[in-house]
Image (cartoon, rainbow, N blue to C red):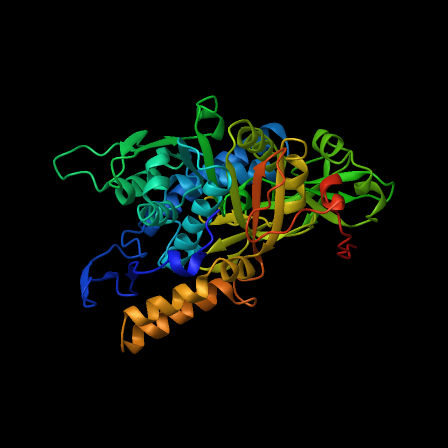
Length: 475
């Protein structure tokens, strides 16, 4: 295991400036500038196009509901985000300063650099395997994996072990953006594929491969996976349930907003959009399958809501088995809590919350991650550590010494100094992203090593999902 720690590992790296320039210290101590792509996407989809896409998707969802009845919240979420008929992520342009939301890697390079150091440390902890693959689930604009590879080059043995980069991404537009960042833009005379499948990274020609699903990756290959899931699980579809007076659970469904649209459901909420939430009158198959644990019966009373994400459990179980079989590791960083929550499903548009039933396909839809549910899904397949708050994780891994190095590298430039400090605070402050965002590590089963900076899991955390009673009064 590396003993020098993050403070020494982070010396003399690049700094990305707010103006879109990268500053690199020369050996003599002077600074040189070269262009670096900004987080601004610069080419947002025209409003008329976005509006027509949303209208087409709205009609598509309405037609399904009219034909088959109210759909689950999970189905609505899945169609809104990934449907080829105007799904939000199929258009790209979702992430960045001028888009609907911004993620930690887009805020500061320090985030990706810290993640890279974490993987180097634990690559050594797991015996420095000669063959590894780096896998990112939901890589956004490719900023995080690009920063990880850039820093990895400063650790030659670690970097030499990376045989390929696998990116799990369904959006054709985001794939193109990721390809341009990792591999360089396609030349003006070349035809740019709508959805790249394979390319070669500009980082020492490492192959980059894209997949729609995690299971498309060859998990039988003899390479240790190093997996990053950053703001991935929050975008997976959730089911919402409401406790009934008889002790059973009704499922909250999405129906068309017109009156008498469904004889099998009763209204929960009105909405100015084309859709509304209703509750099932009987126990659905999802409720019967997902809420079998006795804790869901004993800890909630009439009117309580909970959200459950079976897709997250499926992916985590598969990921855990792969990590143990090939002696790899994973880091999950997302916003949420270490227990089951109730009403966190929401829309995000132009950096503000929006009605998630309004204009499907025009906004990001998310729900808080239940880390206890992820941990329970990995039980018996891998060991999970955490979650711990993002601010605590970044500080333990050396973000403050890294900030000090970057401040020194920009000299007396007060604007850049202020910007660096502001970005550091945004990542670590408990009133910003430092508390609600959390990190959880996944390590192979059967070992006794504990990843940095986590503590060994308690027995209680291994036994079942945590379900803390959250009462929301319902009339």
